[in-house]
Image (cartoon, rainbow, N blue to C red; front, side):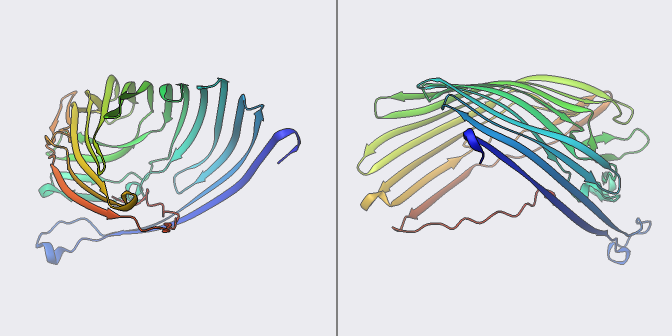
Length: 353
C-alpha cells in the first residue's frame, strides 16, 4: 500500500512438470500380429511468470486495477515469451449505474497425453487417435464492456482473440479407411458477442431471469492437412429461468427452466441446434427452514446433447450422441453452527479426461 490510496502488487511464480508416459501393446493378449512398438517418453516443461501492477480508487467514482505479466514457457518443442495484460476499470456515475471495462489475457495448456507421439487405435482399427508433439499452448486476449442499470439489468459486449487455439479435430484419410483424431493448433479463434440479462418479477408469486446472447465466431487453420478452412458462424443462446412461489409456510417453489442454442461450428465440425428443459419442486420446512426436500427432472425431453457432423471438402462424417432424462430426489438438513472448510482444489485440467 502506497500513499494517496495507490496500491502496488507484484510477484513471480515458477512451475516445473515432469511427464513420464508409456504406451504398451500386449500381442499375446490380443492374439493379433503387426501391432505397433511399445513406447515410453519423458518430457519436461518449465513455466516462469513475472508480474507487476497497480490499483487506485478515485473517490469511489473511478476504480482501476491493472497489471502486466511476462510469461516464459519452455518445453521439448517450444521456447517462447508472452506478454499478458490485465485491466479492470469501473466507473460509478450515479446510484444504480455501473460501467465496467475489462481486458484480460490467459494461457491454456494442452493435456499431457495430447502432446505425446503415440497412436491409439479403436473401432477395429478404423479410428486412430494421434498425438501431436508440436502442439503449443494457446493465448486468449479478451476485452469486454459491461453496463449495469439499477443494479439488476445487465448488458455486456465483448471481443476475444485466441492465438494458436488448440482443439481435437477429425480427418478422413483419402488413401485408406481411417479416421484420424488429432489435436491441432488453429491459426486463431475469434469471438464477438453481446449479452443482455433481464430479471423478471410478478408480485410475490413469480420471479425469473431472461438471458439472451448473440455470438459471432470464426475459426481459421491454414495448414489443416490438404483442406485448410476459414469458417465463421453467427449463433444465439437464450435461457429463461422461472420460479413460481406456491406457498410461504411451508415454502414450496416450482422451478421451470429452459435453454436453447442455435447452430454453431467447431473447427471443421458443424454443431446442430440444441436445447433443454429442467423442472423441480422444492419444499423447505421445520424450524428456520433447515430441512429441504427437492424432486427434480433434468433434460425433460432428452434434447441437450447434439449430433455433430462434418460435410466439408469431401469429408463426410456423422456422430450420434444420446441424451438422458435425469430424475431424482434429494433431502438436506442444515445443522446450526456448521461451517464448511474450504480447500484449494487440485488442478487436473491437463490430465486426460
